[in-house]
Image 1 (cartoon, rainbow, N blue to C red):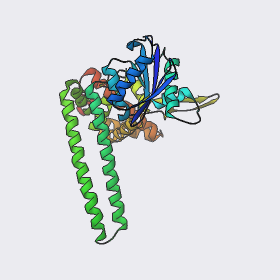
Image 2 (tube, rainbow, N blue to C red):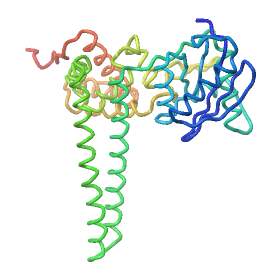
Image 3 (cartoon, one colour):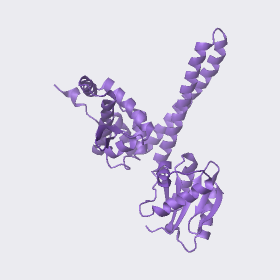
Image 4 (cartoon, one colour):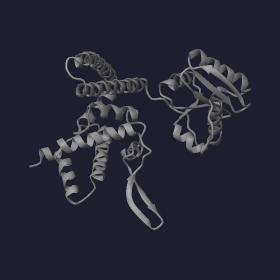
Amino acid sequence: MKFKSFIGIDVSKSTIDAYLKINQHHAVFGNNQEGFRELVEWVMENSGLVLAKHLLFGFESTGIYSSELALFLEKHALPFHIMSGLELKRSLGIRRGKSDKADSKDIAEYLYEKQEKIQPTVLPSQTIQDLKKLFNYRERLVKNRAAFTTRLNEYETIVSGNKIKVYQKSHNTVIACLDKQIETIEKEIDKLLHKEELLLNQYMLLNSIKGIGPQTALALIILTEGFMLFNSWRNFASYAGTAPFPNQSGTFNGRTKTSKLANKRIKTLLTLCAGTSIQYSTEMKNYYQKRISEGKSKMSTLNIIRNKLLSRAFAVVNRNSRYVDTLKYAA
């Protein structure tokens, strides 16, 4: 598609700064439905005879702050590209100073320069979007619960006698409330999964793999958008930061290393899954012990197991059949 007008948008909590490259105009709107309508009207008025399909809006992914803008643009069939902060930063290089106006201009310039390579963003299904919001919210609740639990443990080590009862009562009340909220969110997630047979089936298939639990299964479904976003487990491993890359320069030839440019949350979940797999899967346990006895690195072995789990995850979904532990049925 040939784009003729490029609109860079810097999104913040309450406002959106827009820069229109075609005439170098800048304006600020509210980060709400009314502001979005005003943005589109302003763009159309200042873009001459450019058709809506020839406009390209661009903005960084800022979670809940940018999600409503994306939904609005999609609803009105207006092309847009959501980019990561790293994608933009690498293109711009080192900069001194920062402002919302300058950021929106940089985004517009980036869209113009990369127009031949950029593809408009296609949002995942509404169910995936809702699952993502609930999943992220549950994680925040879990982190808050862990923080209160840790803080209570600290108080119990430094406060003595009857004084500790005040802290215990207060913290235990909050923790109990968070437990209920987490349970409520998990029920909502379960309802959403049962509304879409395909996603529920993928969820059940992933949980058939020893080591992969409910939260990792859900994370994989969300991040792969129902296993439609990545062509293979190797592509996803690169995204997750578990794919090894060469570490070589000139005469130096070091060990392959995983990249720090990764989705650290799924990488952490996969690490936990690998540990669980070693503990409960005879095959993985034997493999891990064999590698360690040969003097191999524990971390590299753990990473191989992370990738084995990813390979199995994509395999069960592609085959549409549960994972079968062959050692269990071996004579």
